[in-house]
Image 1 (cartoon, rainbow, N blue to C red):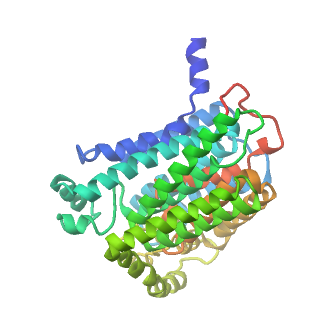
Image 2: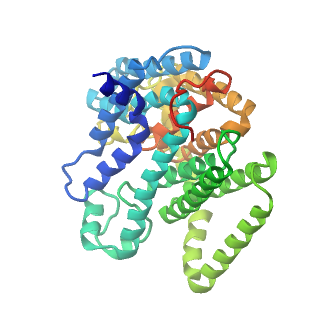
Length: 422
């Protein structure tokens, strides 16, 4: 009995969350009766139970208080949600997609030196998604084309439509952000955390792993061909290079020159062999301002049509789960506007204050928290035009990063002293 309890205390379910969920999505290729959303929900509940058992869910700071208050604010918003045209059926899927992932705030805050294990699990899941995506993108087998249409990832069951953008087994919108976040999770392994305790060989292996995963996640983000993802991926590359090579001086600058040379060679080679490939992405990028201007009218309409400026419309009222509801509020195709319209001034202020507190702590410990600051920034940028915060696959790493920014192990003893280091 003690042995079982000891094993359970060492195995952190949250570290395997993304791998198991991605396997659930992959299983839909075999049977559409598989429900990855249900799998993710059950796993999040198990993560929550383990955190409670480990006394990791507790209010120890103002950030914790804001996180808990915002969580319960969204839960209670069902009261005024039902005052409008939306039924209760809108509330529950939105809760499991965007509110329940807040559990990972406390997973991140209590991760300590196991954060590397969490990010490693996340990257393994991204590699599974990416490799599957490339195979289906290149081969475009008919069963996959039919599957894509059945799940509304594409409009036609043919190879040409499948190759417009890489969907893998989750859809290009989710894939875009998760790969950008994967780039930043990879950058975590480029740092010097625990460098004083690890042999030099282990540090080199750690950095090699991070560099390879970063390059692959960048490739997968490009193939996903989402406008916001392409822009943010480019910004992430600049952000990581400035920090790693210049601001924090974590890696010798000669490697920066090598990186520039490799990128230039790849760019020229693609231009020679497939110039149309470069044009395809260029046209997507230059169309970004048009997409923002088209959405801006929708955002204004959504704000003007709010049930209550202070309370908001209630969780799910402005999300895609409300499509088809008669006399429903305007569907806000943008995560930030959606968040504001559903939570009102009060709820949105809680969320914003939590972010400000977290980012302030992160900036004060930039050398240890640059990856988490990047993940939060990437989510905010991509949420301008897409509902990333409300995607069940995207939200956990966002909340994990916010929790890490508030991790007390920066100044206090490691909460898992017996665990393996990064």
